[in-house]
Image (cartoon, rainbow, N blue to C red):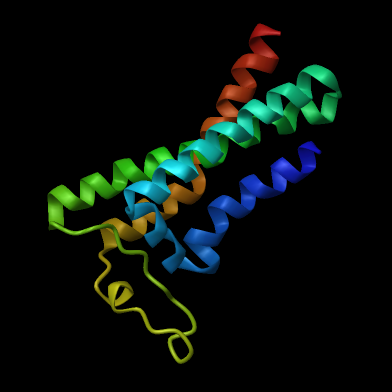
Length: 141
């Protein structure tokens, strides 16, 4: 079961940033953002419950990856606010492929700052969850 949560965590981050960048526009709407935030809070809770009822060594290390979508959503909102203050618009993700099949006007207007923010959205959630994993499992327990 924790493998499903592990897969959901990876998909939640890679789909809006790498595979299909226009899906991140859903996070701009307040109502959808709240639903997604609740879902990302539910994943670690479910993972911790599974960890309590089935303490397996491999599952222990995978359980904190479920925090990655939560970090992704929080970082996305923070980065979107940075772009709102700097450019007066929402964050745009650059689409570097499928220009013949898929056309996105926002993608053409994306800046290098947004590219760096997008790259950090791919890396930082996993680093933060790995750091928490290290702190809790290796130092505390």
